[in-house]
Image 1 (cartoon, rainbow, N blue to C red):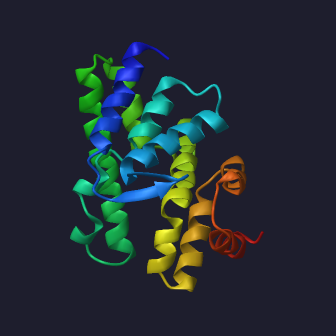
Image 2: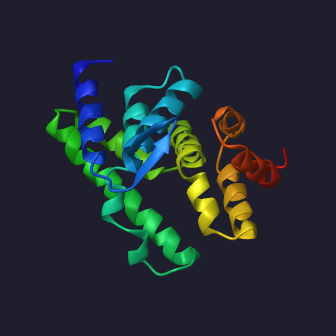
Length: 194
């Protein structure tokens, strides 16, 4: 990729380095938002070797400074979660747009990255679906163990099933390639029937 893309990746990673939530992934402790973006971009590249720059930037920035709008500031339950998630996507899109504009990206490219971050037209847009698959795969690797400790088993199985339902067949198949503990593998097998 080009110098501007490398600068954008560095700026996104630097912004996400401030995440106070730290996770250990593949033996390395990192800020959650930063490793989430890194993994999501890697999954997009893995599942879509011909992915263009907009897809890779959107994957990298899909959780841009996510910790700045805590889930706890919204009402509990599904409605609160969905509103928080919608608001987060709007924030991530706005923030990445500002970052890319500072680096000299054109308006058309910025708008495309923002649409991908928001997952506009998910069912009809291969790029939006690629970001969704990558985000789900990054979630499984970075947060499954933590979520498993917080939710009762029935609720957790439901979350995992809903996650898989949002994914393409290729994306869901890639779950098998994520390095996980045996207990997490067992949860996935129960939830996904395999």
